[in-house]
Length: 508
Image (cartoon, rainbow, N blue to C red; front, side):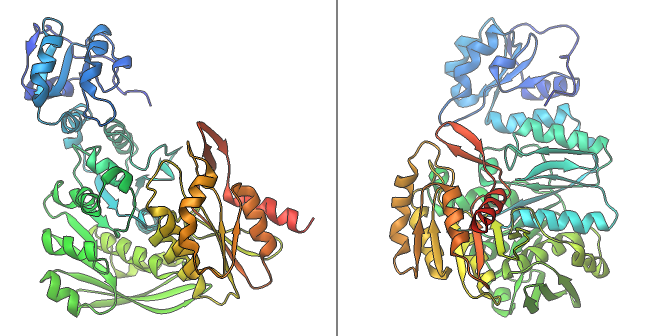
């Protein structure tokens, strides 16, 4: 994406030396271009040496200087290393955390403080995307202009692009928000990943509301421990305060209850009795849901909050979707919607790749879902098992170059609920699919029936061939994605398209 301003600050150039960060912020407000890629630096611009694990921004300062950087933002802790490199070549600016500095510079550059746009952040292991779509529908049908930054796409009325990351880099976020404001967007809904929080990609932003969906094992290859994973997620609620910000937290989740007890302006949401929750978290407002009915056609939920109750009907299925509906309602109420507005949830049909039905002329009940964690796979299978299907056939795999401890847990989740577990490849990346499958296989102990094949298309073919009248087939792991990463190559692959090919083969 191109920068909106192409020139740097005009006026008398400073001598080389050290500058206070506040002075640099003033220059950013006047149009000083800031970059984190030394290769893209042009004469007179500012280079921020970002912290990193595999690579360090300070190692690219010489490259930035060669390309004409006038200002260098570097960590205070590395001052002794940086000063000799920058001396007599540029102005050095030292900051405790350059990642936070980038957010503050982006805020100044794009004049964030002049916006009246409301920002809602959603974090958690599962449910972020579905909740964002539900909330987008709820706010849009209430007459608001809504923008979304999420796993599937970055979009607002009149614009949409595929999302390369769930949460984009810091500068791009501010630029996208700037463009949304130009398009008169009222509310922006952002999926906020744990990586983005840990790397301060949302620095410089003010959140009017935050949602915590749940926390189950994922991304431990990055975070190391569940406690560190939780710490990263909790940053959305503890490190980005705003007066009257609503922290909407799942009280059915133990980590959600922990946050509800710790943060100010917490609003709990969940299903079931709230007496024990109130004892644990204190006097916090709780939005309570009760599932009155659930069929293959949808569900009816009674919602209660601050002495008021109302009914909503939704074509979505699954208790996890009931939770997503409750979270969206809590934020909607905070943003000024009323109980009557919640009825509009009855017209929300669903999310691409989230328990999405594959429409076919053979009336086969085939669903694709993004479930790629043990908890998500359990939830989506439970939802299908609660309906009136004869058998459940589940196709699943595990990603390469990711948390290996999750692999047998994925298989265990499949074995627990599937009548037929089909183990295959997902995105193997640099690993051999057979090796990934071998890591997962111990979890399949006790499975009623097992089918294995490392080629995902072939595995889906075998699963469809296995189907009998009244069966349901779940193809899990990729959802809306239309690619597969094998080695260093990214190839086109869609589970929906693969299912249609398999149906054609079955009946040819």
